[in-house]
Image (cartoon, rainbow, N blue to C red; front, top):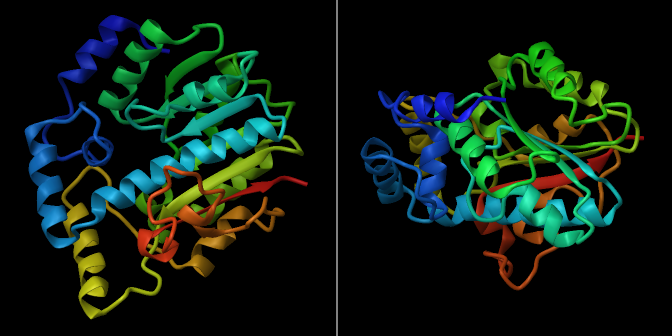
Length: 280
C-alpha cells in the first residue's frame, strides 16, 4: 500500500497525456479528471455519441457481476485495473450484498492518480482490515501476483473473484493477452470466478459506426492506454474454457439486467461484452 503523502504526490503527476482511467471516470460521471482528459473525451463523444453510455454499461456490469459472485458464495475479490474510485466500487457492492461485511477486496492499478485516489478513498471510508489498494501492472504478472500474496489480504489457496473489467480493450494482441490470462487463471484456486468485459467491434449497425470504432482506436493512441477491440469469438478465449455462469458470454446488458441497466432492451447496441466463468 502507499500512504497519504505518496498518494497526494501522485495526484500532481502523470498529467502530460490524457489518461484512460480519468477519461472513463469522466464518461461515467466521476469527478477525478482534468482539462486534458475532458477535452479528449469530448472529441471522442463528437465521433461516437454514445461512448458515455458504453462506459456506464461497463460499470453497471461490474456491479451486477460482484453481486452475483457474492451470492455464489465467494468472499475474496482481486480487482485488476480497478481505475478511479466512484459510485459502485467493488467493496461497496459486496458489502451491500452481504450485510455480514466479511468480504475482502484488493484493488490493483498502475495508474498513479487512480491508485492515489483509491488509497485516499479507502483510508477515509473503507475497512482497512478488509480493503486495500496496491500498485502493480497487469502486464507484469509475476510481480503483480507476488504483490497480491504479499498483501496478506487475499488467501490465494481459497477461491477468489478475479475481476478484469473494462481492461482487455487496452491490451493489444502483440502484448500476449492469452499468456497473461493463462498465468492468472493458473494462479487462482479451483472454484474461483473470472469476471471479464471489454468493448467490442462486432456487428456495427452501419458503415459509419464501423469507421467510428476505428477512429476511436486511433484517438486512443495518444493516451496512456491505446485500445484494441475484439469480437465475441476473439474475446471468449480469455476464459480458457472455464464453464460460464448463466447466461454465458453476452452483451453486457443481457447479463442479469436490473431496473437500472442501460440498453436492456437492445443489448447489442451497448458495444460492451462480458461474462463470468468458474474454474473447475
